[in-house]
Amino acid sequence: MKKAAYQLILYVAGTTPKSLEAFSNLKKICEEYLEGQYSITIVDLVKNPKLARGDQIIAIPTLVRRLPEPIKKIIGDLSNKEKVLVGLNIINKG
Amino acid sequence: MAKSKIGAGGGGGARPGLPKCLTGIKGLDEVTFGGLPKGRPTLVCGGPGCGKTLLAMEFLCRGALEYNEPGVFMAFEEKEQDLVENFSSLGFDLKSLIKHKKLAIDYVHIERSEIEETGEYDLEGLFVRLAGAIDSIGAKRVVLDTIEALFSGFSNEPILRAELRRLFRWLKDKRITAIITGEKGELLLTKHGLEEYVADCVIFLDHRTIDQIATRRLKIIKYRGSKHGTNEFPFLIGENGISVFPMTSLFLNNCVSSERMSSGIEGLDGMLGDKGYFRGSTILVSGAAGSGKTSFGLQFVDSVCKAGERALFLALEESECQLVRNMKSIGIDLEQWINGGLLRIDANRATLCGLEMHLVMAHKAVEEFKPTVVVIDPITTLMGSGVQDEAKAMMARLLDFLKTEGITVLVTDLSLLGDHGDSTEIGISSLSDTWIRLTMETQTHKRMRRISILKSRGMKHAYETKDLLITDKGLEIKDIPRRRKDSK
Image 1: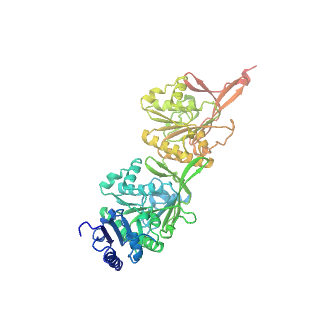
Image 2 (image 1 turned 60 degrees about the horizontal axis):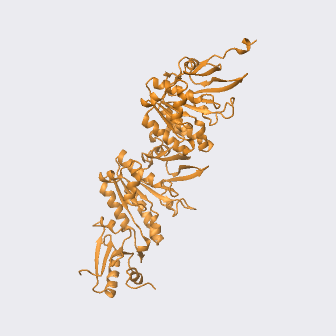
Image 3 (image 1 turned 135 degrees about the horizontal axis):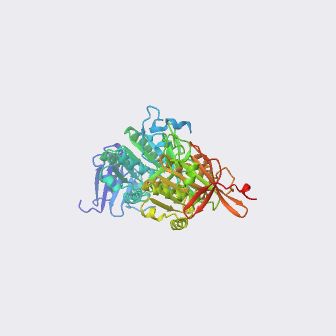
């Protein structure tokens, strides 16, 4: 998992249905489109509230694409696959 | 309004069961009869540049410094560094407050272009951050400035509104006294109708310009379960933050002194029951141009300084040098008092700034210099720098302030209507305790100065008009020679 091209962080607050759903949606999309080139870190803000400031997290769940730059954020349960792919710049709009 | 004065002392106006939280902001606690609703959110709204952020931050700083209530400032618009810099110019050292865990600032940055939305979400991140900040310093006060930024950051309005509702309930449950700021809207009080969620207390700030003079005003639109001042109150942003001027700040219960002080003119003391003015009273000197008002005021100043007391002269028409030069010509040396630190002359053109600013400057000068006597020369020119009714209210406030400080005030007033108008323009005659009129009378070939006392509360005073002479040794008062009988 070293130096994955796509470094993704998923911010959640506790184990809620929404966060579980977001994670499973994300996992599915990554496996399908980014196999072998991604890493996912899950940050639980209930356990680490201070980490919310760094990435300016307000909404939960928030997916942050650290790499490749520029930083991208997608909020919500990631249920819309098309939007996630556009948001992560995996496919272009249109 | 007048009736409500009685119960106003020390926040006693609140019903039992509605605890209030003192803001520490000058005047605001008076117009709200004891502060903001404790443990509840208050909405502060207004247009851009109206002072929302300042009011909110001052609420936190004063809370931390004066009431030992730490506060969290959640900024949606300005970065922490910008806030620290902006407020240092107002005398608030945010850095040290932060260091001593009295204040926490969390800058929330929302960049729409970076964010993509898909599916359901909530604002738990905001709650986590706010809770973290509150817990880190044990905060009792919170400011959200301006939470409406969320509306530009997130497009799902139903979620946002549900979350805002949850946020305010959450703050209430935590017994936090909060200020939420909001931008003025066109149809609603705020752009996004925040008043719907914050229903307990709403304060509206306004910054408008009438006759080219800008005035800031504060109005309490709503205060559930409490009485409040319903007027619009002018307020200032001075060097020490906000000062609200309640119209009814004067409770008319200031102690009066029966001590007397000389007017600086022997003959006049004689006319004032042989003893001069009451200490702490307000003296109005009105007269036509050239009737000797300024000299009259400065001679009083001279005698005050001679007695070793401090005098402040607010000159609105002449500069310090000019005043010193002119007084030298009638044998009064002001320079010695200026050098000796007993006299301070602040010369400012009346039109330099708005009336409020003059008030602030006067307040500041009084607080710094601590004079026992203040002379304002002439008060009439201040009229030009404001709307008439406002000027009157402003003057009343200034005189009230000086009176409560126990300062003897002498104001000069140029009566443009001529020598016989009994209504002083600004209508301050009713506020003054002693009213002296200087007139010019033409007799055969000469214009003679005359002095008379129109009123002087609480003492026996002379009723006859006398001659006022300007000599090499200052002003002198003489009986009018009985000219008619003598001639021919």
